[in-house]
Length: 113
Length: 114
Image (cartoon, rainbow over all chains, first blue to last red):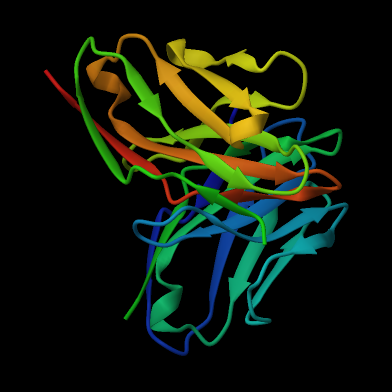
């Protein structure tokens, strides 16, 4: 049983560019949450998707957007990249009935230069 | 505002010694409480969780945690640390009625001396 998978593992972008990160949830899970983890910090909640809709959002600007597909996989898009967007982006999946129990992927390390 | 505090940024213990990592939260009601571990280059793994009931919860890898309402604390403990326990440990809070996100502490980095 595959756990949560994320791609790519690492990514280097230039300021002003756009980036798309991908996540496939654990089998049987239908919710996907995205977190940003800056170096030396705890994860910060970006948003969560269920039934292809954004259910809740953290304190992130509109440059951060997402999508969930019918197969429950998800994408995180970040436009107009800033140096401060450099971080580890974590995807976590869960099921509607057990929202709190989230399983995390290994993350995508984004570096903005 | 709700917050989670992990007072110890870094802790070093000897292998075989006992361990206690501290976590305090600020919230008006009883939250849902979690401890996660993050090893280098890996994602976060859930060690244990508290929702209700017995305030002493057992987790994986020999860890346990105790919820103390009067102290707003949820400290993580292990009686005998192994070298493989070296990692970053995060305490997180899920807010009742707002079950769509977790609020995280800044983490405690654990080093284990042989």
